[in-house]
Length: 77
Image 1 (cartoon, rainbow, N blue to C red):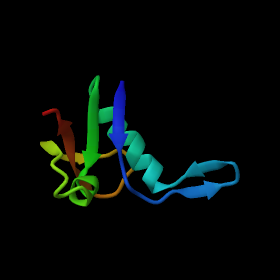
Image 2 (cartoon, rainbow, N blue to C red; image 1 turned 90 degrees about the vertical axis):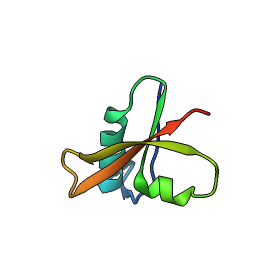
Image 3 (cartoon, helix red, strand yellow; image 1 turned 90 degrees about the horizontal axis):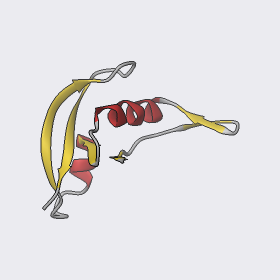
Image 4 (cartoon, rainbow, N blue to C red; image 1 turned 135 degrees about the horizontal axis):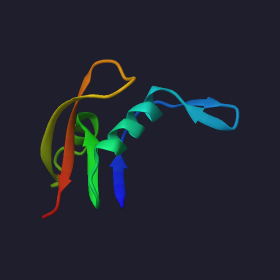
């Protein structure tokens, strides 16, 4: 199982959703290994103080997404 936590905007297109937020989420999902939770630095920053620990996966270029993104995997305790 792959899990992803992402915060971003989506566009509603009739009965479908799209936009950059979904594109980023799809790219992050492809970076996750089995039984792994992957997040962007945005999510990591939003949960500051929660006690959740992260492993830095470095800066990644995400296909079809502007700029590069720092990616983290959630560490088990």
